[in-house]
Image (cartoon, rainbow, N blue to C red):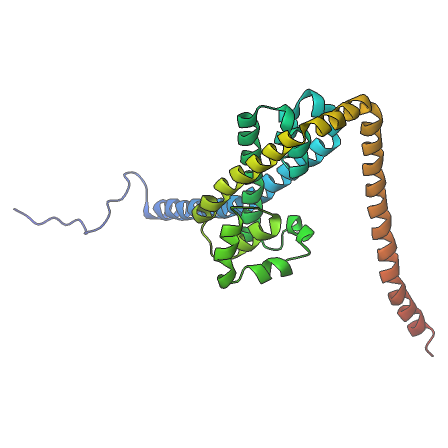
Length: 254
């Protein structure tokens, strides 16, 4: 049997010269690099998108407290599942649906802060934690186990970010976070039922003064935004004054 003269190696694609085969291989390499880059970008963006969306919904819920407290309390809990909202309307809603809604959205917020610290510790959304110094101080290896157990009783953004900045796996974080969210939501809802008579009168008062409260909330929001803009401009002018004085002294030098 005659020996084959074909070289040992991958068979070339029929009809394509070697130069075109090299271009195809290069294109596949670019595609793989692009897909890996997209995966890295998605890994960095999802915490910011999740946390920013939930914070935005929470702001909307806060503005609509007078409107939703008496008419749609479960929607209000979904928008803003804080302890104050749970105490306010927790006595007037079914226990199990309110528990599941509150625990689910509280868990999403904590997962968002965990992901922010894991993928981008310098995120703008973490500035409310007074920078990353507190997170860095809590993210030491010897503090991780106590912080995980702390999640069973209470959660906050600093603890979430500290665990995310460390080497705690997401699945281990969720093992403590989910029971802790259910437990804390159940405690707040139970306390809300104990103070339900007083909270019901508060909800009725909010409903009676709905228009004035909504307009007042909008006016307060606009005033805060205007104050922040004015403070930024004032600080910018103060920062620019020493530079202008320095330039003036340089111009007057003979």
